[in-house]
Length: 68
Image (tube, rainbow, N blue to C red):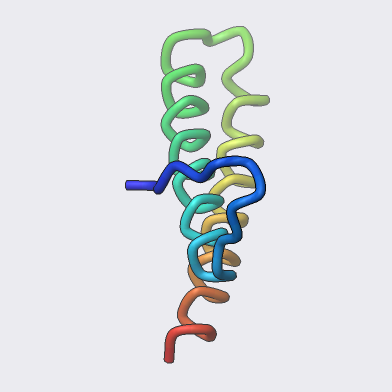
């Protein structure tokens, strides 16, 4: 999904946000897996998961603002 950029290459704001969104989605998947597989850290993983969902929502909102 995300493009690969070389050092010094300039991204548009929307491209940068899409890259950030991909990172948030990867973190969401990671924390879901951690919460499921490691009951000892389930509460922490769920807290971090909720933070990632909030970040994802903020990024999606900004992308909509910049593209409409």
